Image (cartoon, rainbow, N blue to C red; front, side, top):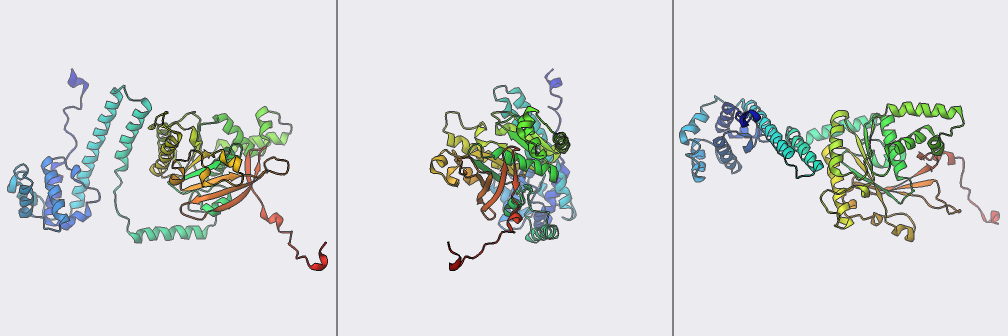
Amino acid sequence: MAEKNNPHKLRIPPQDIDAEKALLGSVMLKADALFEIMDFISVECFYAEKHRLVFKAMLELFSKKEPIDVLTLSNKLKNKQVFDQIGGSDYLTELVNTVPSSANIEYYAKIVHKKYMLRRLIESSERISELGYNEVDDLDESLDKAEKSIYEVTTSLLSNKFIEIKDALGEAFERLSRLHESTDKMRGVPSGFKSLDNKLSGFQKSDLIILAARPSMGKTAFALDIARRVAIEHKKPVAIFSLEMSSQQLVDRMLAADSKVDAWKLRTGKLNKEEEFDLIRESLNNLSKAPIFIDDQPANNILKMRSMARKLKRQHGLELIIVDYLQLMTPTQTKSSDNVVQQVTEISRSLKHLARELDVPVIALSQLSRAIESRGGRPKLSDLRDSGSIEQDADVVMFIHRDKNDDGEKSNVTEILIEKHRNGPTGRITLNFDDKKATFQEIDTNAFDDFALTEVGDDDAF
């Protein structure tokens, strides 16, 4: 009965002993042939234990620049006390006589590697099966382990090769040529704000970008502006993990920003002009075609987010991730009893790992400490709330800052302060924030060109 429940138990794992023998024989004929296969063949790739022992001995001889033949291998294996285990001199001689030359070593190696990957896939499925039967672990943790197990198999299919600098230079020149020929293109994902893109050259792959501000400064509005412009204008898929606001609230904000219709009118349905309905219809059409994907689970954690982001990338080709906001994420490793700094450190590092794993930029919104309210002035890196390693993990740190006007209200003129830029310049840009429509806009500096400073002489003084 047990055998019926385990139909794969007695099946022989994928392997090709002849290909393994041909590979080892090729190395014995020409040791330098190892250079052609070492980037994707390791000791673990061999199914037969004796072949693992022989290949390991070959690598040790090769690393010492010693010849690899029947005699040297025999001595090495005798020293390791495994000579008889592999079949002695007779078997080594059999290996060297398996192939006439080393010309086809790469072909043999690919067969060996394919069989190894299939065995890994089987092992991965067995681990996943054990996770399913283990009812002790948390479900999210088990699902993450299962996905990670498969993901490791698929990513290891890529050869770990050195990139020759001449190839990298060729790619760099082609990229620079494209950028030079078209001023619209840039190296990273465009933010949709020309002044910001001039500073950052877009959001770069695998970068963690921190966007921080005190409450009511427009963090979410700015992030949604970026998401909307990236998706609508550049047709790039964007994932939004919203831990504070519901998906409907985000949609309302994006509708208001895109249509330029007062957000309160939109929320209450009190649209009093036919043209406002037309604007809403047009925006509905624009947003319905935009590849924006929203997850509004509160208290989300990195395990769930990573799982959904992986799936999204497979299905739609993810280009940008936005997290609103960092301090609301639930840590998975640190305990609730641990201090907040430890928890935020875990979260910021996990977001950086997510950016690197999926090779997409991640924009994480963050709160600032209350110290800035008592101190006043522009925010600094030290103002990052419960910062932990946020500053260290981030590739870019931006702050949103608005001064108060004479009435004590916040001005609409907004500074985006780039306080950290790991691979480029820091600086600041100025935008206008329309709080009624929940959107930021570029300030047209050409509007000030008609004004000229006039030098005042002594006779003109008053």
